[in-house]
Length: 264
Image (cartoon, rainbow, N blue to C red; front, side, top):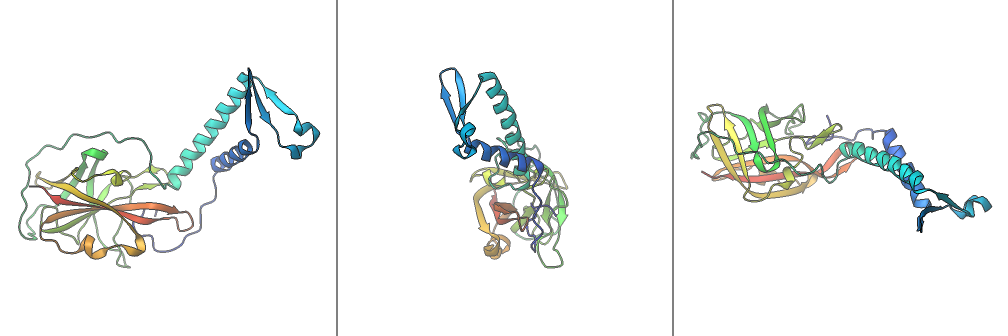
């Protein structure tokens, strides 16, 4: 599984550093050891005194040569940073999400029981963070942990939880990212109380939920009862990874949980 998994269960061999990472590190260390001094119309790079008599002289470069060097170094650093960000994402920053319009369809009212006749969920839309995805079905692993979607491009409804719109907490999970880029729930932590979540069901109706809280929990302190436990109303839980990424475990150390209640 990729490091966006919700519940990786054991340590894994840390990934080897990529060539962009090596180049970026080399450029950064070189620049740290060669402070740049600007004097009139020239750019001077002060070399370290440990290089001897020749090293104590200041190397003077024309603005054009320096600009070329800076551009190449910047591209290398930016390219490597972008590559490593997708592998070891700690603070998601892939720009601002493009807001989506709210889906159109008949709005389903809340029921007062876990009625098996409530249609199955088939799609999820979160306009404020640009999420629109079909929903697959998730169960439990052999260890009793929540399954994760096989791809970062879709989210999944946990079939052991109520159907969205029934009394209780319907649970939907998705990946935050993978080694190739952002996942479907990459911006989940950006939701705020009052934002809306739409679940389309098999009969075309929409269950509309209003976000009440966004929380981050260390995985070893995950509040199972608060997330999966019974509720008096129709509610929704959206779950993904979050917090710090541990490269040795190839796992995030926390989970982000969004709490929402049905609005109608």
